[in-house]
Image (tube, rainbow, N blue to C red; front, side):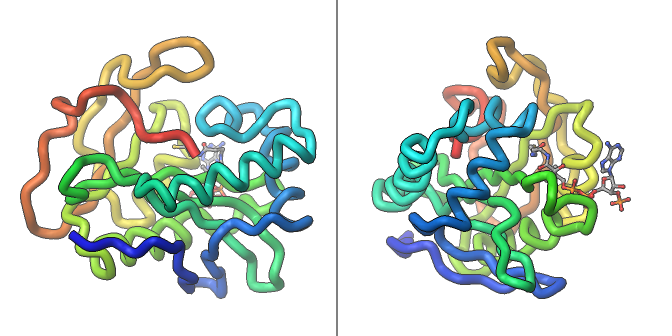
Length: 199
Ligand SMILES: CC(C)(COP(=O)(O)OP(=O)(O)OC[C@H]1O[C@@H](n2cnc3c(N)ncnc32)[C@H](O)[C@@H]1OP(=O)(O)O)[C@@H](O)C(=O)NCCC(=O)NCCS
């Protein structure tokens, strides 16, 4: 499968835009806000504590992910132009028929369904633009906002994966959600290591 070497610009429901990360003030401010969240630094490579140098390094890491064929990290931008969060599509098998997604919003962007709209747009591009057969999400069972986000974007619950991924120094259970096109995919249980790549 031939995949693009750049993160595209996508439009999502409710006037949101998805675009590549930029090494500029508004995106660094987004990383700074994300670094203040209790959970985001534990499931991503968002630096805590935040410094401008670490924030810039985070943005460069996002670019490298795409350059090295690892996936497509997007910034979620509100209708008025403010970056509010991120959604990433991470490629996970050599044939690139399966991928996982991760997402987060800074506190100021929450409560308006932005994550589900952004997730839906990224998933639609992955399935119908890239032709990926199967998309997966891994959500901790306590994370109601994320479980609802997955459901609202059309993902279906498939399994509870016990002790699937290391978070904050301990193995955690994850609920597996998936959305498919047609086509084969190795079962999630046979993946070599637990959990999606960290953004
Ligand atoms: C997960 C996340 C992206 C969801 O975004 P959000 O803007 O908070 O989500 P919304 O406000 O649209 O809420 C989605 C749904 O969850 C519900 N919800 C939100 N917070 C909740 C809570 N603490 N308890 C119960 N339900 C909650 C909302 O009522 C809404 O329900 P609905 O679909 O029936 O309307 C955001 O909370 C976040 O970034 N969390 C930290 C990072 C994270 O957990 N990422 C996902 C990892 S799998």
